[in-house]
Amino acid sequence: MKPEPWWDEFTIEAEPTDRLLDALHYVKWYKDGTLALRRSCAHGICGSDAMLINGRNALACKVLVKEVAPKVTVEPIRGLPVLKDLIVDMEPFFEGYKAILPFLINADDPPDRERLQSPEDRARFDDTTKCILCAACTTSCPIFWGDEQYIGPAAIVNAHRFIFDSRDQGAEERLEILSDQSGVFRCRTTFNCTEACPRGIKVTKAIQEVKRAVMFRRF
Ligand code: SF4
Ligand code: F3S
Ligand code: FES
Image (cartoon, rainbow, N blue to C red):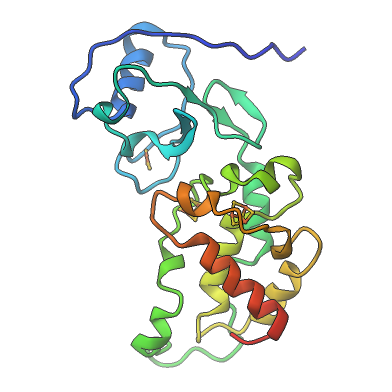
């Protein structure tokens, strides 16, 4: 049987400019080696250490101790099954990501050089290229908490990245996928996703653009 969740408390010393990730490492290395958390780059790039920090989704490697001291509460991100401590099962999240076909689709023969694009066309989807798939947006969305079938903001952001790419030819297919009942219209414009994004992506704006593309087939 799955054990009941519990809270644990640790007191440590840390420098104000240490990152919260450093503090968690200290706990793991010197206080309780069983503490389970994901992290890799420690520089806000890999997206693996999203967690609920004092009630808000953030990356532990991007939060300084002085921003949360003297006391901080960390929890696993919400809406995904907890595997252990701060580690959740990311599979349902990546299912949504895979569903929107997150790769360039173009049936034309490759040109001799790269597929050219004007700076204006590139700017159209620049914001959504910044996603690091940390899941902070999707797991801050109340619609996703209540319905894990909802494809979620991260998947829509990554669909946006290709739908508005002038070199891509898969927009119709993606818009069809996003127009079903678990798709983009489940979003109620709550904005939690935009607030949670550690990359500063205008997530709700991207979702609105995808909604309009579904309705008017303009992209
Ligand atoms: Fe993370 Fe932002 Fe990408 Fe969402 S849109 S997965 S919050 S980087
Ligand atoms: Fe959820 Fe963001 Fe929409 S929080 S409801 S996906 S604006
Ligand atoms: Fe890679 Fe924080 S450890 S983003």
